Image 1 (cartoon, rainbow, N blue to C red):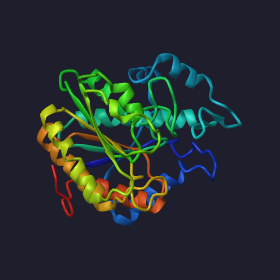
Image 2: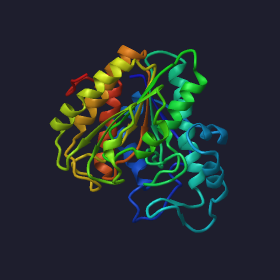
Image 3: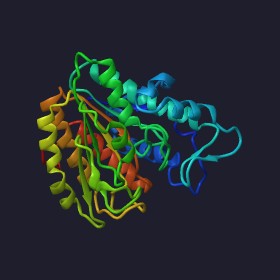
Length: 315
């Protein structure tokens, strides 16, 4: 297995209290399942560097980033919206999370048949150009896409982003809207947070809303259109917003996905990457709030990315 796991040193320090679902326990639960499954021994591992502040301007307005870096509280939580708060270690956590996706891009672009998973938090796909929301501050996948296109112009002309988090990645769509170099393929439960108008997707977006209660079979059938679109687009890199809150055991939504569904879609994306872009995939953790289901689903995701075809199909 060639999957490399990137971790950010301070990603467990961002802590908004025991009642907040986006907690450090999420990373601890994944670690436990990696050890129990044996993947801790078979995957490669790397420590991310914190992102250089100027790199964040690739995905976000300069004023927003400058204000974010200037407002870090010391001994209180400063709430940017009802569920997105900053405490003393938040800025370091988001810097390492963003640094992880940039480091992962560098690694996968340095060779062939390379897949990376960024086991970082806080998540990112709700963060818009100039706004934090939905637990998210920096849009890690949009940053990864722009970073790749900026730093590897001779190797890359197009990048595909795939988002299977149960919530609509409004921030990613907002940032990449109209950028013909980037194709966004997303699925999400609808209606559900962030309750945005999904009938106005930009031309470079393939959006698949799913009804509450949708099963894994419905999910698999619905996203077949992604695979056709990605083949036609022929990206040089696939980036994944890997959210696992569509799992049947997750309390944040109402889809009925299982680990097999996450393994299936991950392996399908691996097969597409083998066809289109020398196997290059960068995946970054988004949602997933039932700790046991999250850990098991990440294991399934990594097995699918690594080429394990059991219980998989599609693409």
